[in-house]
Amino acid sequence: MKLGFVQNHPVFGNVRENVDRTLEMLAGQEAGLIVLPELFSTGYQFAGREEALELAEPIPDGPTARRLIDLARSQKTALVAGLAERDGKTVYNSALVVGAQGYIGKYRKAHLFDAENDVFQPGDLPLPVFDVGPCRVGVMICFDWRFPETARTLALNGADVIAHPSNLVLPHCPQAMITRCLENRVYAVTADRVGTEARVPGESLKFVGQSQVVDPDGQVLYRASVDREETKIVEIDVARARNKKINPRNDLLAGRRLDLYRLN
Amino acid sequence: MKLGFVQNHPVFGNVRENVDRTLEMLAGQEAGLIVLPELFSTGYQFAGREEALELAEPIPDGPTARRLIDLARSQKTALVAGLAERDGKTVYNSALVVGAQGYIGKYRKAHLFDAENDVFQPGDLPLPVFDVGPCRVGVMICFDWRFPETARTLALNGADVIAHPSNLVLPHCPQAMITRCLENRVYAVTADRVGTEARVPGESLKFVGQSQVVDPDGQVLYRASVDREETKIVEIDVARARNKKINPRNDLLAGRRLDLYRLN
Image 1 (cartoon, chains in turn blue, yellow):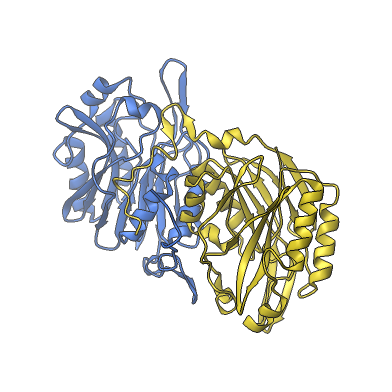
Image 2: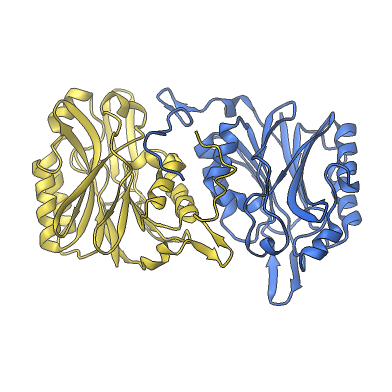
């Protein structure tokens, strides 16, 4: 199957223009699954909860979600896209999952990073794995990577591919996602953004780009630049992620020593 | 405290000479903790269980364990050392833990790699954390790294430092140990060996060296060569591993979402 990402450069608050630009970057791209960055339509650095509430939209009934659902239908391409989600008076840092047949589901970021705790409500939905047709996709958002339990839960729930919308500002994640693939034998697509936001005094955030696709053997199939917008699609073999053996004696899920772990 | 490793090059089966050489490499080294490679005294590639049984020794009463206990006492240095352990008719791929006051405990490798399953019995002891004086040390052996539950269990049990005797033949581990440190905010010492063994027809094993010390922020404090024997000691600040916060809002252990994980 074909698997890819958009690495974009949103302008904070210009939702309609940011979505326009991303749809342009998706135009004509055919793939089984394409992943967009975290908060791809709004930008990242909200001044507070009220501002986020104004820019957030319902999932799946908000205008940005509808536009993505329409595009997925017309291009027959599944999408995972990070969005600020409004649910009544609550805002979540969420991801929409949509397939060629329409809306599939959503995920709300479980591990909020730093000042995100002042803006968003922590996720209250299970770590999801959705069948989007060509593969089973597990979703986690940005800082969720830091907790190995997230990717592990997705792999145990049957994910072939981890879709990982991100807005990375720290340097470690691209390399660490290799470990996530090696330990779970999954593909992972990290869709990051580029550019800088400095809306909060003293807090200039530079996003590190380097969106990437990694395979179940930890090979980086493609890694994007640190500073340019880009759409990239690569070919993968989903069957490789369904075989958890790295040799005839070692299965990375069945070989776990649950009798010895203490994880609470 | 001072923390280090020996990267050695054992000759298969020459236990006495291998231990002599390692004691030479330790002579005069003063440190809070020094880690030796997996199976440092015997070499790695046993033809089968019978050969391993002949070369293995009891822990702590075998001659190699006694020599290490004497050295730890005289140099006032804690040691973690990988040994083939004989217990009756059973052989484990074990690690001895010894402090300046004498024998402390042992660990038996939980996740056996590939042909090791034909030689060793899987570990049946808890994943251990021992107070060796200057730090609390958790022990895992080589391929245990591939399962994130191992290092996580050690961190949750209070390890400041993960001592990781290894005989690495695959390329990924040195980078992946950076992830283990980032996700658990611990120090990790991987003590590897160098050289090649080709005792089994068609199975030439080249060990990759690159023994290293990594800090809780994922910085590689030192990484050894791929092909030379070496003893290295670095200075660390154990207190850094006891603070699991990466910013005022994110504690890497307390911030786990146990309500959302499914790890069985």
